[in-house]
Image 1 (cartoon, helix red, strand yellow):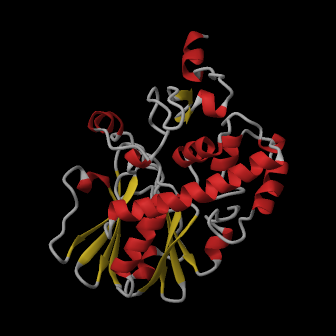
Image 2 (image 1 turned 90 degrees about the vertical axis):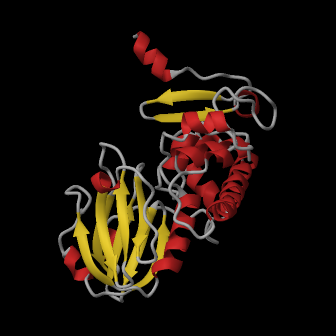
Image 3 (image 1 turned 180 degrees about the horizontal axis):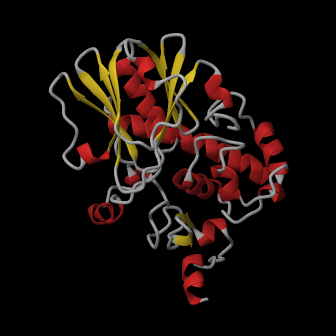
Length: 307
């Protein structure tokens, strides 16, 4: 973990990170404490693009009581009674807020313009999904209990902090994956909840190149990867809990990350400047000394511009 840097935070915090397992775990835990047992008085859909289902209708939530909030991969599931599950994917810029009732209000900004969905609760508060920015990608599905498994959650892999995610299970996944390690970690087909930021953190912790092929790892490297996945995510969940307390998180605490978004800064382990691979809308941060035997990979963004 790095110490917060005011100059760096001002530069980078404006670029949102897609919420990943640690952020979403704490969001689900804190939201569960706030809304468990509350009933929905009304539902308002403000963004035409956010709602992906029509049967059952979203109005079916009116009068129903929230019985659980949990996370699956990068999805949040809000369970209503014994029958309905509201599935949310916040994507990069979606966030949840609680407003009203006890006088709390959302932070200043473009809240009204960016409002996507509102659940009016029976205690006078509103649970709001907002999505900041012009690209509206957040999604909500309302499913009958059990249908979410074959719907938005179809094809998801193992939870990396579950007992089923053993070194042997990971080794079997790797043997069947002819892809680069970074893609293996973020695809959600084998292991879920890991995105761009924590894939970088995990690979740095494991001393593995993001460009290495998953099916070519030897047993020792696979064991290091398993330990890094479990260790990095477990620590991050604990750090996020301390960082946010009982609040609903709004920004990824980038100062808790060792390498992601720390391009050109010294590696916390060896001091080598952290290098960056730019590709489409994703950036990969790594230490050339610790992870790639001194090799610095091409800046693909610059390469495209020079063609």
